[in-house]
Image (cartoon, rainbow, N blue to C red; front, side, top):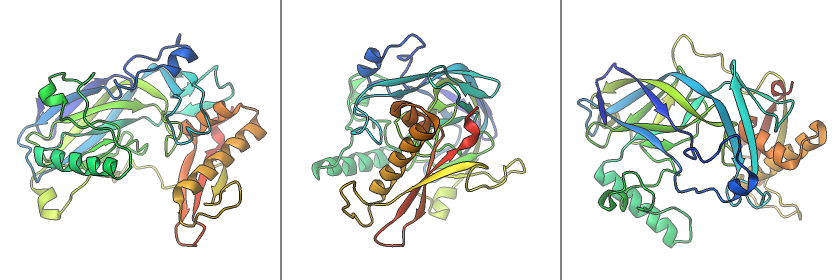
Length: 340
């Protein structure tokens, strides 16, 4: 653990999401058997001097320097369309001069839009116990959540690891948020619930489509710099219970709701056998994504798994409307600039 003061900048080296298990020499058999236990290795914590419960910590992303190698994997049983893609898949990216390119996806060039997939603070004891209780309740009702597990945990002390929260879901103190707009120049504001805040970061992406649909983005190691600003009592006085993002500086890019050149495929909550599931935004999103995969295969000549990987690193899923019952619309946007 290191200490920092409000106003300080800290540069942190981060490991990739699978903690070095994926290399340029990895095989599909190895991807199929990959150990998900090490996901996600985090760098930290950074204790902010004077931070205490009720404060609000602003963390500004100053810079993210990418490694030269990145990867996108499809692990069997994982991802938004896991039932449609049972086989492993691997895309190995070479990162240079602000772009990622791959011999596994010839003709595709992805521009730099680096961001941390996992970023956040440690929950205080009361918040951690509340989260554990509600996630256990979800499991008891038939839902899915990963309970604390000391096997492979860091630190390995069972008194800690046996109660620590898993890093897969985001929570009020942030975590695995996978929000690609958290790139250099953007700030994340996180309510403090533990003494010092205890900031950690990892799972940095070179680029990602909104939704990270196959379960991975362009995963990489990085050297990332953050600037901390502590707003004393702001979370308590303003009633802020969960994290939020903001980009308000003069370097902010102009707002665009879509890429300059794009193809957009809408999806509605209607099954393949023509059954209407009114209000099911998840089904609408799956239909939009499947339609986009079909489009990429048909118009650009890639395999379905290649198209799925393209969607995960470049296609944005956007909620277009949630009011025109029974058919909500989720739209998949493909930026055409990625094809060279």
